[in-house]
Amino acid sequence: METEGLERVLDYIDTHISEKISLAELAELAGYSPFYFSRLFSRIMGISVTGYIRIRKLQHALADLAEGNKVLDVSLRYGFDSHEGFTRSFTDMFGMAPGKAKRYLVSYKVPQYRIPDENDGRMAMELQERQMDLGDSLHELIFEVLRTSLEEAEEGFCTKIEVVLHSDCSVRIVDNGRGIPLTQNTEKDREVLDRIFSGYPLSGPACLRTEEIAGYSLKTVNSLCERLKIRTYRDGFEFWQEYIRGIAQHEVMSEPCDHEPGTEILFRPDRAVFGEKRISADRIREWVRKQTGERNTPVIQIREED
Image 1 (cartoon, rainbow, N blue to C red):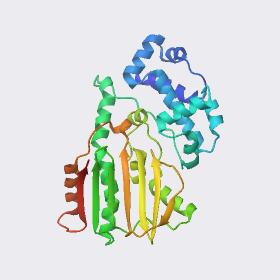
Image 2: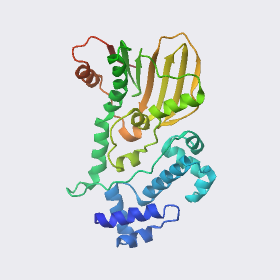
Image 3: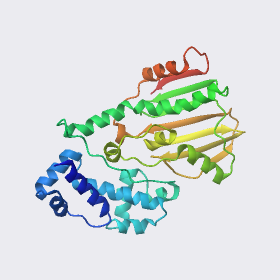
Image 4: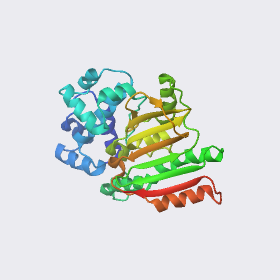
């Protein structure tokens, strides 16, 4: 199938995403029999036609929820048989119920799908290689969180950083910096954390078939994690917020505490994106050495924990 023909099909799906789309009409648009078109589509895109349409419907549904549309209206718009069926499909893909996404998602733009490169005849391998590339980028999540702590150290506010690699592939990074400037004002505290952390879900298939992720930030880290929990200690209070795939799960919580200032971030990279690739403590140590050079501070401890 020529790239131009496949692009016509993908554009047609997006244009008619709220309608019932049949395999026969897509095959006719591409100029193939339904059987042959279905095989070609799966071979090139690495996913069935119906699976692709389902993902796109859910992504468009998420965008509608971010704009404030009602869950029931959205489920009907995209042709789900029931509210329960929509909720189940949405939760399976994004890791949370649509109502929670609607309440806490700051913004979302339906990603532009990319067509795997077939010039070298490796169409079936494209997605596997893309996943390997993302697996190699797994450590960038840790590095991005560490950069924030190192910036605190460079400004003279942080003297120790701890990195703990847990057996379930989650990572905990703790520093004794100033802590995020939260104030117990619920609305303002949420705005502060949204500016730093608020992301959006990147499903495995969606991430593997979209354009390259543009750079890393704490928002990107959050979007690429199954879960992330931030704790910050400041001015005699502990503040915390939990996220699933970039979306806050509740309002910012706080309580008085007797704890030195600092920040703790616990996160679990998304297995749907990175697979079961392990995090290397040695690779983190090497990166830290390059960043800190001969400086003695901050003291950075990296350890693995069962």
